[in-house]
Length: 567
Image (cartoon, rainbow, N blue to C red; front, top):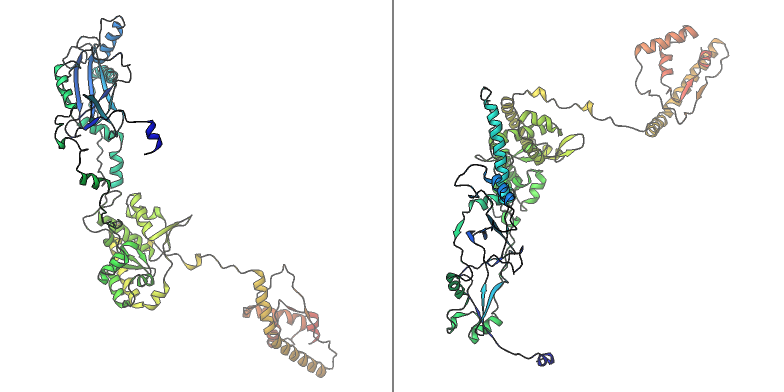
């Protein structure tokens, strides 16, 4: 014992009796708008009702209309606004005056497991569990009824005015809407909505009760149930236990811990579970989950040593070849007798739209969403879902196919590619009949429309210099031969001739080299020969022109005056 216990000794021990919680339902009522000294005990209670499931209670109490604190004119005005001038049995206030008030309950707390009603009687404490704690507050629903009556009177007056004019009944347009299948998330949001809760509360009927005051004989009888009725037996309380039972409560036996397997989605299989299935089912499950996959990746997911020929035979049953990659078939994703989770469109319509998207991707890398939607005519949510399965959005380019073209597979398996091409031709003919289009409407873009390849000026200059160095020896031999021929002609004619001068001009950094790779036409050669003949006479032959044009013009310029002296 601690030393502090000696300073705080036990004065009295009290027996505790705990009543069972399922015997009776107890709901204490609180009135927070009034102090305890001004209770409603002496007020006449006209009616009482309860909704057990909602734990909602309503009490109707009479109002003292003769009290000096009561405003008679205001009470008559409220009754007139609520009930109008007619006298009916359904009126809220039968005396044409607000002579009663309704109290409605709200839950003070939602968890009452730690609350109980205690009664100390004859040295014993009796505890009774509570099912709820309710706070009674004034209800102003009569104001809503007054507003409703006011709107009804205005509508009646407008209808009376319009009935004086003879006019034909307007034709009302009827809009037919089909509800889409509700997802689990949408159902949870609907259940938690205020409208749904109000509807559920209105569906539960009221259970009418009889009110008994505190001093009523029935109340005295019911209060006896707050005391334990069989205090002499050992079964009257849960606190009386045998020593063995009390010990087992203090030290419960060790229980074997059960390792719970993590819960995963119902449509997901582990790799170990997947490999227990037949090869065809493995390929189908993988393609159904991945939707677009290269053949090499599929072989990597299967067990090592799997025959590729068998895999090719299986995958052609559940997928189609698009740009060298395998895309799961539409009827595998959308079986018969199913519909879209977005709009409720049947599976057959979804399959046709998805086949059209796949067929377009066989010839093009990108698609425009508007063009696809204009042809397949599906809701925007379904069109987006189809495109997201096999493509990704690109800025200002539309939707691009998800994977690059697998040329290796097409090169290694030309027979499979040809078979798939023939299959796509058959699908194309069916799509043309369904969507009423022609294959000429979707002409693939030509290679000429591709972006040109840009080569820098430094690369061009470097290439030209390399070509010039390679041909330098040939040009030098050609030049020596021309000089030798010119000297012989000069010796035979007896005229002194100046040597042939070839001037090499360096290129500036800003100057681009002249393209001389292409041969000149016969017309260009004739023009050059005619010009030289006019300057030099008939001594210029076609052979001389050919030799002259072999010199690269971007590096060497032959002076016409020097060339003229050679003849």
